[in-house]
Length: 345
Image (tube, rainbow, N blue to C red):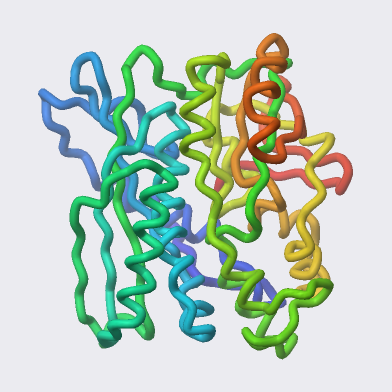
């Protein structure tokens, strides 16, 4: 079997080799063969969250981290948003199946100890927990200076769902429509690319961000939006067929729901940060849409009959927009930019 380096970049030195990541994950998952007979795993691996069958209910499990965004937080010495990001990255995955996140554990790998960093991350974790209505019930901190250059922040969340209300994406069909829930900005993905672009353009954290009155640190460290309360409020009102958290892999995340053709014929206008990243990094639209959320932090797939209830419930809370539809076939198309994408990895 041919292998691929996980962090190989393109000729411009800006993009991660997602094929290599997919190869690594695929090989790893194929080794995980053991299963208990009593608490069965529901569905295959590869979705946004993992489910365990407990009779009438299912338990959802997620684990995720903030990634290299922490390197910019370290440069700016601004950490509170990182705690919010850690919560958001996990709970936004949990709700994609209609599960309610209830508790979280955090994990911090440290180069050294700094009480100010501990306080700010702790404050952020607490704010994120309030926003998501979860309890942080414990965690682990490890001093491993040989392994990390600054700090690595990650967490794990559990959620609960009634088995008969789990949303898997399998009911998605031709003619369904796709709605965008606006992102707060970059969220916590694509930061290997972001950091390289900032470096190549000589931008520091205290500099003014191009096209804005804000500093670079305010724009790139904007915390990830948490969608928990909004989604939990609509799942019993609207017939939702599928939901996707738009994180690493950009718009490709939606193909994890079901192998269909997803056509985004009216995507949202991306925030300035994405436009500047494209221009400064000399990136193609295809690279942008397979790396960043491009202003769409979360997607919901519904049928046409559910449109009125969906819009009425959410339009006063955040910017939402009908951005596309589902067709028979496979892959992703964004006709406006002549973008065609295939597969998650």
